[in-house]
Every structure is written in structure tokens, then in C-alpha cells.
Image (cartoon, rainbow, N blue to C red; front, top):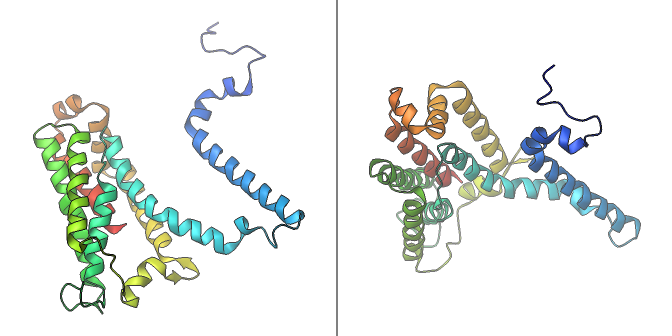
Length: 254
């Protein structure tokens, strides 16, 4: 009888489900936290301190989803990077740079506007996506071709993008955005915030890319063992460049 992996009859629940808890622990903790906050809201409602359970209200749920969707889009790109055993510290600064430049193409403020495109939406979108792609391409090319540490390269991009953001606006906020551009961040479709819809679509596309395409298999192979992947005929440099470019593009979208 092979009892190497057998557990004693009195083993605890956590011991018997150690692997499962390790895999789903964060998700379980998240729902536990939501349950605790919801119960606190019900307690406050029962005590008469609140007129309703604000946490469980539809308005609050939509606000949370809208805010989470931005970080969610960034997380999609970061997932690809982390799978390849890398890291991208610059996504926040790239988001700021691409967003602020795109806003200057969509503002009615003549002192900050770039060109005469305040009523257009496509131009700001192309600009934001283009800046994200360029920043990601620089990250991927430098670290992959010269075999530098992702931490160092993306830290440099973080500083560069943050500095360019300040230079672009002289430290001033960009206001008076046209309504069509604002709709992308504040609008609704069928009662669902537009950023949430964009996040869901990107999540589905990323899942398909990772699990149903050859590129996704290459990404896992490069992250698992770059030397073996290179021996198998995979262009490791190209995959890393593409992954960091994708991460930058998603930061631009965010």
C-alpha cells in the first residue's frame, strides 16, 4: 500500500485542502472581506445609523466596478509580463503620460489643447494607444536584446514617463474635456459603466490569447524555462518584446 501522500484521519480541513487553499486563497479572502463589510452595513442599518446598506447599493457596486476596471486592465498586461518571469514598474506612469496627452487632444481649453481636435474621439484614442505601445516596445526591446533586468529597465521608463507627463502639462491639470471623450470614462451602456465593458472584453480576449493560441503557449514556455524555449525554436527575444509591448498598450487603453 502506497501511503506516501495519505493524510491522517484527524487531519484538519486546511491540511486536506492545502493546495486548493493556496490556489483560491485570495479569492476566498476577497469574498470574506465583502461579507464582513456587508454585515457591518446591515448592523449599522439595524442600529438606525444608516438609512440603507450603502455598501450593497447598486450605485456603490457600479462605482467599485468602474474603479476596479482601470486596475484590471493594467493587471491583464501585467499578467503576461509576470508569466514570462518579468515585471513592469512603469505601467502607472505610462498610464498617466498616455492619458494626459490624449486629454490635451480632447480638451476645449485653448491653453492646453494640442491641435483642433476637441470634438474628436478617435485621435485621442490613437494617441493614448500609440504612446503605450511605444513605451512598452522600448521596455521590451532594451531588456530583451541587451538582457538587462526588467526591474532596472522599467524603473527607468517609470521616471522618464513621469517626467514627460510633468513637462507636457507644466504640472497643471487638463480640464474642459469634450463630452464624447468623457463618455469613455464616465458613460454607461445598458446601465453598465463603459470602462467595465472594456475591461470584460479585454479580459476575454486575453484569456483566449493565453489559452487558445500558439503565442500564449510560447509565453508560458518562455516564463517556465527560457533556455529550453530557445532550444525548442522559440524566439525568446521576440516574445518578450511582444509581451512588454502588449503591457504598454493596455496601459495606454487604461
